[in-house]
Length: 209
Image (cartoon, rainbow, N blue to C red; front, side, top):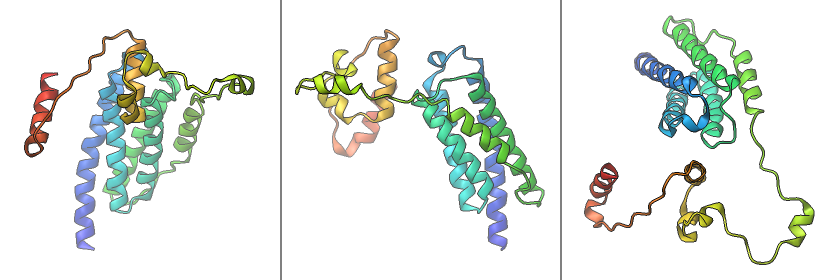
C-alpha cells in the first residue's frame, strides 16, 4: 500500500508537468490559422504527451485518466495524419480534455479518487473524430478500366524512389506529401555508418541537416 502511495505521488508530480506542457503546446496549436502552419513537432509533442499520460495512469490504476488520455491520443493521431482537419471543434475539444485531466489529477491528489464525470468530454471527442476525412475507393467503373500496370504514387511522381516510398511509415508518407503540396524542395541524403558508432553518427548527421 505504501509503495502504491509513493507511485501515485510520483505520478501526480509528473502528470502536472505533462499537463502544463500540453497546455502550452495547445496554445501554439490554437493560434495557427490552419493545419499547414502548425509545426509537425508541436502536434507530435502533444500526441506523445497524451500517450505517456495514458501509460503512466494505467500503471497506477487510474482508469478514467487512462481512458481519457487514450481517446485524446486517438484524436491527436488522426490530426497529425491529416485525417481530421484542425477546426475550432478539435482545438476546443483538446483544451477541454486537458482541463478535465487536470481536474481528475486534482481530485486524485486530494485523496478523493477519480471523482469526475468524463462522459461529456468523451462524447465531444467522438464528435470531433466524426470529422475524420474518409478515403473513398475509386468508383467500380474506374476499377474495371484500370490497366494491369499500377499507377505511380504521388511520392514517386515527386521523384521519391519506389524503394524509399515502400519503407516509409504512414505518418512519414503523409508528412512528405504535405511538404510536396507546400512546394518545398526535397533532398535525398545517402550515408553509411559503422555499426559500432551508428547512433552517434546518425545523431550528428541529423544535427547538421
